[in-house]
Image (spheres, one colour):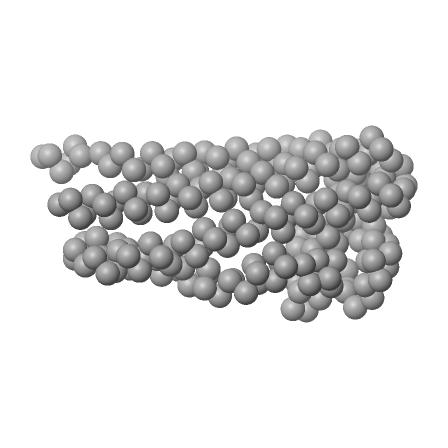
Length: 231
């Protein structure tokens, strides 16, 4: 009967992380929705703005392509393709131009060997392994009381947290580059740049929330492992 009524207080850490992520996701969607209805004075589409920024930066080997979905925009350094979603590629809104410019920021980082981007790329394999194997190993260690498995699980998940941490300066820097180029080039007016900044700031919050959620999960693992030691 005791086991039935037992409540694991560490679940609260997961709930907090989920709430933060949901709030951040709602914020970016609502902000993007607002500025996707504001047409830019320049009349440039997201793809136009992206190609112009790439040319201004002396980058000629990156292809701008459309991709399905909403807010699925990304830059692939392997294929050197800058993929823009259907809400960005051929749209003339302030939001579309802001997002397209942000992805150009990543292409510029890649072209200039931006250190945090290179570091993030270097830890992707171990971060993926950590995300995949950390919980199975940790749970096995918890169930069978094998301390080394608990430790390995925590270490592997730490790499996933490290990836989220390194992602922050990469994303913030890409947005900073984007806003500067949009303002200095005249592709967006001063008020329009403010709107683009709101969109990119909201997007950045999703990465902050992801990091906070990962840290809370790591804390939960440490607490559970400590509880097992006391048992």
